[in-house]
Image (tube, rainbow, N blue to C red; front, side, top):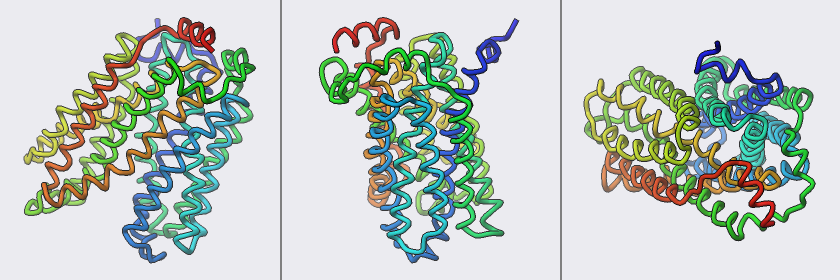
Length: 414
């Protein structure tokens, strides 16, 4: 008798497992690239003579391109298939990552980061839609949560890759390693098949403008604003958390050395991974909406505790909890958004509502830095608690219904 933790994987079909692996690898490699860029940025700045503003602009350009890529690849996935869109998006951002290693000017690097962002934005929507349509409703939450949890694995993998490669071969070789996902793209194209649900529904040529009208328009607005608030909070908090821990106590930080800061980061990622995975089990047992709101409210309560506690041992306890609740809710977003939209517009909708939040998130790190000058770093980090609360409030407007009922209602309306 399979146990409650692994039984859902054991009873799944080979095609379902391949879909899960493909989407997870795509998201993992996406995360790996984000971490690689952050860790090599110092060397890149020095060699290419980039200012701090130019470096920030690179990330902002990537996030803006990701928003455009999410909508473009989402449309492509709805028209021509999730597998094709997933393959092209992974291939696109892996090649663009490798090309970053050949750049010698700020403009060249900017162009590569823009192309990388286009592919990065398309990967999540294509993969999440494919998993949502392949896995049955009773296990969908766990499957999508597993895909989301691969972000934490990729984050750690990116750090390990930089630590191994850069000291011996330089920052360019780190980016060259980005071509590895291209092989994943080829595997995806050869081994996966489109979902039965998409094959049955994709013939409906529904204009993407329907996403902004009537009941679908309401769902789009709720999901987009809700995710914008959470991404603002996440990037604002976790961009500055390591710096907050290592800053001298006299400057408002916690004065941890590099070993202690790295140790805290590892422990936090463990909490993050568990938060991602556990959300699926909780959501499949209880309400997706209520679980999502509960995670957000917990994050809002924990952030001020983390920002103002001074005991380093207390930080080791609170840190994993912040990672658990302050990141785990992203699993809920993939579950909720996949079930709110009809098959023939699902990837377009998910690409839009997720990636529009990337635009808002670009302001998070900047504003936290600005307010920390006048308010102090602890108070500035606590501001992200307000964004979590706003997201929870918006989430109360979500509607919950079964996939079958929703598909029927939407198709009739359209």
